[in-house]
Image (tube, rainbow, N blue to C red):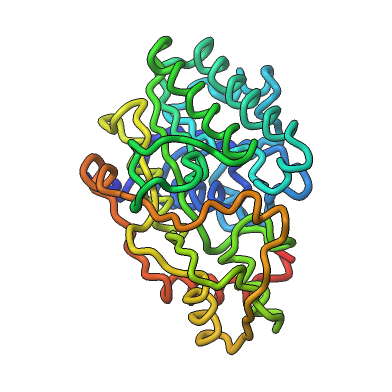
Length: 329
C-alpha cells in the first residue's frame, strides 16, 4: 500500500491543525486535493500558529474552536470522511506540576470528539496520533506494539487513555479508527519558544542562535528521531479505508541515534557548540532511558517506512527556520 498521489474529493477534519504535525498534515492534504477543515483552539503556548497554514489558507476552512466544546465538534465532524485527531495538551513536563490540562484536553476532549462522531457521523474514520511515551521505559529493544504500557507521566497516561477511548468507540459503536504511536518527530513548523516540545527542534534553535546545546547525562541515550514529512505519510496511509482498525501502530525509526550523535551532527551543519549537562529534576523523573521503535507492524500492514535520513532532515529543518524563525521564537 502506498499513499495516494491525489486525495481529491476526500473530506478531512484536522483537530490541532495549526500546530506542528497538524499543519504539515494539512499542507499535504490540501496539496493533494482534499477538502480540508482545520479546527484549533489557538491556546497560547500550545504551538498553534496561523503562519503554519499561510500557503494553503485559500484552500482550507479554518475554525478557531476547542475540541472540548460539544456544540462546535457536533457541527465540525458532520460530513467528514476522516477526522485526524491531533489536538491536545502536548507538554509532557507540564503534567508534573499541573495534571489537569492533560486530563481535560486529552481525555475529555477526545471523548467529546468521539461522542460527536457517534451522534452525527459514525461512518467517518478517526486517525489518532498518540505517543511512544505510552510505553514508558523499554522492557526490550526495539519496542513493539506488544510491549507493556507503563507510562511515567500524566501526559503519557492521558494519551493512552485517549487511545483506549477511541478503541472502545470503534469496537462498541463501529466508528473506524487508526491508532498511531509517534516517536520523536522533528522538522519545520514546530513552535520553538521553549525546550518542552521536542529535543531536536530545540537543539536546532540553540544552534541557530549560537547557543550551546546541552546534552543530558553522558549523551549515550538512544532515540529514534522521525522527520515530520515521513510522519505525515504514515498518518495519511492510516486513513485509507482498508487500513487496520483499532490496532496500535508504531510510527518511528528502527535505527536509533544517541543524543551526542545528534549534537555532533548539528555541530557539523551549523558550527554550534555542545556540552554535557546534568538532568533537571523534572526530566530525570520522566527519562525512560533508551527507546527506539519496532516498525515491522506498520511496514507489513501499511507498507510504510521512514525515508528521510537524519542529516537530510536536519538540513531541511535548519533551512526552514533560517528563513522563518521570526514566526517561531
